[in-house]
Amino acid sequence: MRELSKTRQYGLLAIALAAVAVLLFPVYWMVMTSIVPSSLLLTSSPPLVPPLGSTSMDAYTEVIEGRPVLQWLGNSALSTLGAAVISTFISTLGGYSLSRFRSRGQEAMGFTLLFSRMLPGTLLIIPIFVLFSTTGLTNNLWSVILVNIAATVPFTTWLMKGFIDSVPVEIEQAAMIDGCSRLKALWHVVTPLLLPGLAATFTYASILTWGDFLFARTLMSNPQGWTVTVGIASFIGEYSVDWSGLMAVSLMSTAPMVILFILLEPFLSRGMTAGAVKG
Amino acid sequence: MTPTTATATGSGSGIQKESAAKRVGPPRFRSPRRRRSARTRDRLFGYVTLGPVLAVVGLLMAYPFYVAINLSLRGGEITNLERLNDLPLTFDNYIFVLTDPGLLDDIWRSAVYTLGVLLPAFAIGLALALLLNRKFPGRRIFRPLVLLPWAIPGVAVSAAFSWMLDASYGVINFLLRSVGLIETNIAWLADSDTAMTAVIIPTVWKYYPFFTLVLLAALQAIPGEQYEAAQMDGANSRKQFKHVTWPAVRSASALAVIITGIGIFREFDFIFPLTRGGPNEATQTLAIRIYTEAFQYFELGVAAALGVVTMVIAGTVLIAAGRSIRRESA
Image: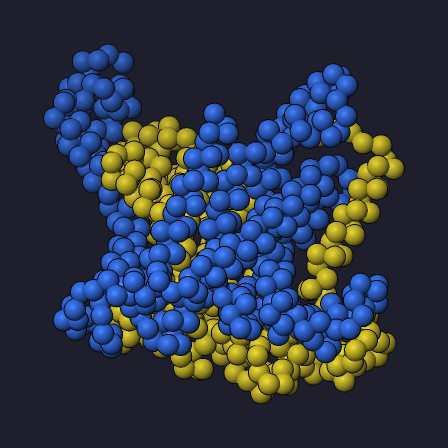
């Protein structure tokens, strides 16, 4: 880090502010659209800042009354929570195995996990759809949870492996010498040191599952079972789109992940970059 | 602490004794038989912990992949999976896919979409990483802010841009008209000349944060002395970038480009909600076409064959890219 003069520092600050203004304009425009009445926005030259006294939350109440938005959000929450918790659990165990045991089995699995990222989701969903409809699993939130676990585990296992690699083996060896079994050492000694890794994995899996559209759209044909992304997509392309309502729902679908992201971003950044830089 | 006490207690069984033995002496004094069984148990633990991953990958990826290949090789109407193996084995689906002149167009559009997202996303990501690597007031607040789009669901991003790109009331048309870049509104998503650009823009917005994240980490790993040395040698900032910064971030960049490239190549969440591959197939990439064949025309065999062809294409590009990167860094 080079020391810069005060003027140059403020110059950089100005550039950063300008960049954020441009980059976050879509978010601003979503908020703006959701709180300003459509009549003011459906013109060829819309106001760029909300006119004084015109803002209201009507779009939110209207869209919640008009469509099963809360149900969609609930479905999203359930499938996200389920997939993220299970995925974190599975990938902690798997990451531990990949990190601590370097036998042929682990090597083959590590390679398979990398290869599986090449499978296009649109290809994978075809047999899964056929399999699930044969076994009657479609229109069941578990089907969405299962497929999203499968979609996240290949990456989160590598992510956890990276975090476990950074926990010195000596710590658990010491615990095992003191009479702990491996499982106990993993649970009582390694896991507490893995909290940043668990946070990163949970965040990653949550953001991915919450944002999933392909799997939920294909497996949940019944509107009662839609997740919020499928609900949002159902607005787009309608003959006359309710833009304020659409932006309101989109923001409601964005808020939980943004909060989660801002809280846990440092952990995620650390894990993702450690994995990506190391290769 | 003498080795004799250790061997005496170490040969016994039971955790209590074992731990006592270990406390007094190093584990190498255990009897060979114990050591072997402990090692077997250890290896077993290695496989048990891998079990759930194995189950997930096996049941939800490997087996479906096998079914997909099976589907791609079956002729006739595929309605019931249980009777899939009764259908005749044939290469018809592959012949249909490979002789279809539209395939090249799909491949071309996939390439345009992937590179069209990759290059600007990388450029924006790198510029932001270079900016955030400098010291200035409030720098810590900017990082989560510029990374934010990554957390927003792709479909919500699509919704926002479908509104901003709207032909009549879209704010992008308004802004472009205000600064005089265009005179009349553009129907971004409805015009086959602009539709590809219109689906690329939201995808770039969603993908650039990943580059910022990875490149920023690579930049922060560069020791400051390297810049000081370069400055002493009289290198200007462009030369510093070329000889210090770029070599340090190149391998991280290559890896991030490949990972992201695979992601964009199979991306679904932007094109499908925005245009469904239209207008006039102008945005129909391979990923979109696979989905349409399967879930709109219910041509499961053709869709599966197309999916396998897509994987082969992606794999070939990936191997070529990997090789050229290795050659360059060697």
